Length: 472
Image 1 (tube, one colour):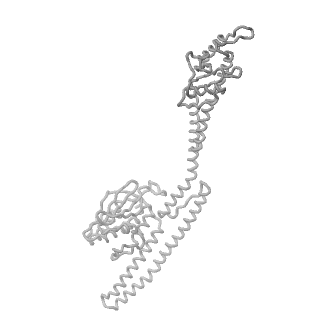
Image 2 (cartoon, rainbow, N blue to C red):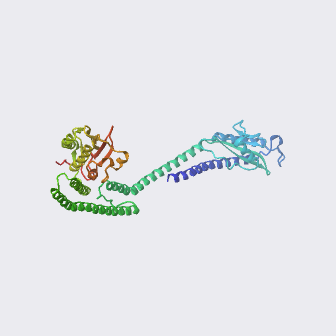
Image 3 (tube, rainbow, N blue to C red):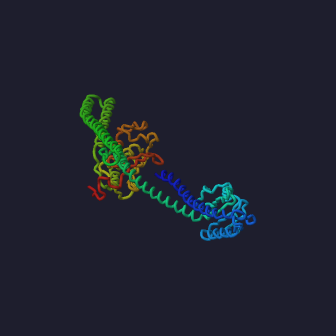
C-alpha cells in the first residue's frame, strides 16, 4: 500500500504543480493579450507616424502614454514587470522604467517565439526550490505582421508557496492513508498469525514432552483452521503410537521379569551341584543380573515417559544438599571427594521425586567415572528465570562426538564398556525432567571430566498459579 500511495503521490504532486503554473500562465496570457490590443493602436514609431483619414496626425504619443500608464498601474498593483518592445527590443512602453527584456535564457526564448507569432503557452515547470521569475510573451500583430512583443516577468513566490502547500496536503493525506493501511495490516496480520503463534506454542509443548497439548480450532483464515485440525489429528495419532510403544515396552519388561527370575533361580540351584568358583556359572550369573537390570530400567523408562509430573514449588538447594549427603558414603568408599557448592536456598518448580531420581542418576554416573582421589562437585545457582544444578566430575570426560550421543537409549562409550550400567539411566532422567519443563545438558568440564547441568524453571507452569503452596 505504501508503494501504491507513493507511486500515485508523485504524479499527483507534479500534476498539482503543473495546474498551479498553468493557472498563472493563463492569467498572464490574458494580461499580455489586453496589452497587445492596446499596443496595436501604436502601430509605428513617432517619427514614422502616418496621417489618418481626417488629414490630422494620429495622436500616437498620447496612446503610447496611455499604454505606459496602464503598464505602470499593472506593475504597482501586482508587482509584475511588463513592457511592449519593438522587434529590435527597443521599448515602446515599459514598467518599471528602464526595464529591458531578457536577451537570453527562457525570457529570450519566449521573446523569439512571440516574434514568430506564437504565445508562451508551455513554459518550463517552476518547482518550489527553483526559478523565482516566470516570463510570458505575446505578439502584437498589425496588418498581419508582428510589429512588437508584449512581455510580462512575474515573481513566482506565491505560486511556489501554493504548490508547496498543495504538496503538504498531499503528503498529509498520504501519511493518513499509510497509517490507516498500517493499522489495517497489523489487524489483518494479527488475525492471520494468531493461530500460527498458537500452533507454534503447542508444537513446542509436544516437542518438550507435553503430549496432551492441542490447538484450539478457532479464528484465522480457513486454511489455518484446517491446518490446526490436521495438526490435532496428527498429535492424537502420534500420542496413540507412543502410548502403544510405552505399553509394549512396559508389558514386555514386566512379562520377561518372571521367566528371568525363574532362570536365575535355576542357575543358583545348578551352581550348588558344581564346585565353588566355577567361572562359567559366575559368568552366567553376572549376565543374568545384568539382563535383570536392563529390564528394570526399560520398565522405569516406560513409566517415566507415561507418568505426569507432580510439579511443586521446591527448595532445590535443600533437596540437592540432602541427595549429596545420601551419596557421600558411596563416594567415601570409592575414595572420591563429593561436595556441595551453592546458596543455602534456591526455589524452582519441579517434581521432587523426579528431580531426586534424575540427580541420583547423574551423581551415580559421576562417581562411577571419577577415579580414586578425584572430586565431584555439585552446585546450585539461580540464573534469570531458571535454577541450574551442575554436577562436575574429574573423570576421563567425553569427546565432541560422544557428547552429541550421550543420553541416547542404550548408548555407552566404547571406552567405558567395562563399567557396569545399562545405558538407560540418563535417558530415564531426561524423560522425567522434560515432562516437568526441565532440561538436561552436557558439556566438558575444565580441566578434565564431564559437566552435567539440570535446568529448572523458577516461574510457575501455565496451568499452575504463582502462589501455589509447596507440598511436603
